[in-house]
Length: 79
Image 1 (tube, helix red, strand yellow):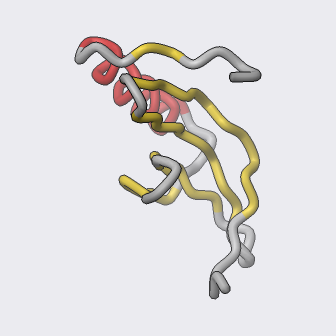
Image 2 (spheres, one colour):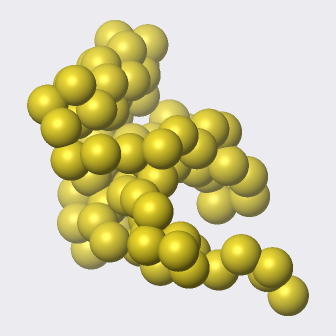
């Protein structure tokens, strides 16, 4: 049982490379704080405090752009 349940507010993007998949999303914790999380189906790569500010959205876009340059591809909705 998870001691700190999180509720996903939004998935910003999802990428894949072969059988590997990563998604970036915004989550809200029990106290109402928001977090930006990059995660695979099995693990959280990173989790950062998130404010809906241009700087934080730019950080999420930069991570996605870096993954795309390394050969990852976008996952279409519904896949």
